[in-house]
Length: 463
Image (cartoon, rainbow, N blue to C red):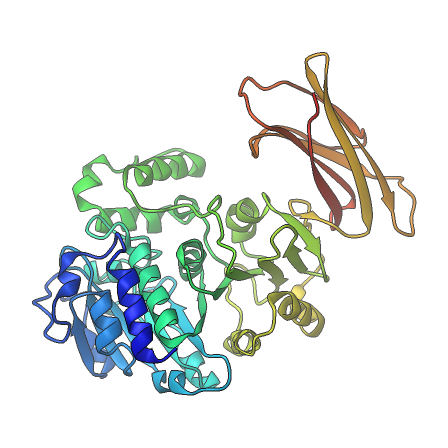
């Protein structure tokens, strides 16, 4: 497809998009008076790059986002999105598969006068000699002390992720390119959210991501709420809650009052998307963010600290050790991973290679009991309704070993939602009371011989 034909296809799609307003039909190069950013929080001139203005996403795609520089795109209510493009001429080459990197920024630690826009990933992309765009979170331009906004949006642009996804889909269509979206921490949250919205083919690389905004450091979340939703701030959550759990609950209740997507744990992944999830093993995010996002899925262990999601094969997971706490992988490590992905290697292959060549970065053995992983155990299970109760039982064999010491656990599901749990114990049978909620009954049976040697199976409940 030539580029002009690509533009035509994209324009037809974009003008039907619910996130595109009438201003998108105007002239892009003229721009408009833009006064939404705080002058003490925003200074685009510091980047010393040419700046082009557009009245909407369609205008940007047609009139010049393929030119290196900074592009200011009007969204809704006069709010803008800043995008920095680099090495875009490489997308004009023919032959090899076209790949476009998309960088997302995490928290801006100790801003101390640092002004938006913030563009992440351009240095790595330049080292790899790959075309790239970096997207700055526009909410960070509203306040000089706001370090993080997760690209979730604000009361003026609550559907910001949809706008970004629309832009990325358009770029992928125009240039017939596969996207590699990457970001860590708060940028990782944005990557996981965009993964559920994109219609184009893309690989999403995240490291130490948040998976629910309300479960992050309360002071950061409260600051985001104050800046992004000032008209609702009088109804802000209680700031003096006694426990962290109470604070998190209050924050979640407030975010529910907005229309932003603040939790990605139960969102569906479209089939053309792959995710490579890197997690530092000593990070508190393992229990507070990774476990809730990953534990509802079923995993095949393919290495010491490498896992593939069993059902869809769309998510690869690797636990590394890059320092103590919430520490990102080193830059050269991320470059190596991005290079492998850009070369077209499957995520299954990439995490195997990470596990093999970087075993020293795995750290000591982790307790993976919250991952339903399949390593060596062969599990069979059955479940039926008997005398008004659900009776489930399991039997297991283990390659090269006996079955002594096997522990068993069970979930009862109604329409795929967990209703009851029997945690691990030596007994291989369980009885659940029939739930009040009507629906399709299933049981998930688990068996493990040690925390990192676990298997699961999901089965129907027969009447």
